[in-house]
Length: 316
Image 1 (spheres, helix red, strand yellow):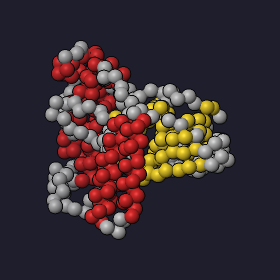
Image 2 (spheres, helix red, strand yellow):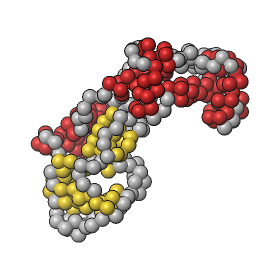
Image 3 (cartoon, one colour):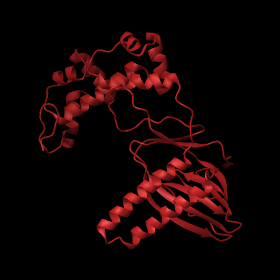
Image 4 (spheres, rainbow, N blue to C red):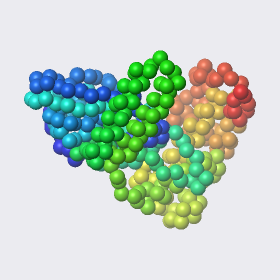
């Protein structure tokens, strides 16, 4: 077991899709009581301490959370008290969820979205929410006022659960209040470095032009850097080369065409940027462990029942 300090951990959460408020509450523990012991809980838990001390553990890491601090538990890990309360302890809690990417690390990190966002100018800022795992509550008076509004809204929703219209109104109010709260407690990070900015532009360009021939010389000219710098910027930012990203994106698009159309493999290969069908098939098999035809046969049951045309567009 190890006890962590307040400054060492950050949660970086992709905001595409946006984190969703689930429920909130208020709890008071008496001396000798413990926080619930949970495993594989599917929500983030954000706590705002009003008084006392909470001795909380996340897997093998112990934390002590004091009055006037906020703390965030990750989903899908073991939460439990490593020590019972030694004084009356009171806090508000908020459960929220995300289906996007997130990571906990020693510093804030840009997190890639699960949703591809096309951009005319090949760059859309990576929208990442940064939360310090444990920190003094910023703008404490304002934050507690917002939390109490969220809590009151949640109670009204429970009271009106049979009123569909009113319940819908309360749901959207809660989401708006929650987003406002996240803006208050998020960690502000320095602007992205020029390297990250250019790497993101390169990524967007590759995704928008994956079906064309792309060279380092072309990318260097497009973004006003030396061709050798193209790979350096991408590896430093994403840990992969432009060619690796291009191959990954092309193959992902190919799988969609295989499942959503009846086009021949040779036509799909050309459509995703491969002029040589044999090289396409070899690359596909290396990546997926089977040929394009075998992939189609194996996963054809996933094909939508709605008819599609040769471009993969559903007829509605």
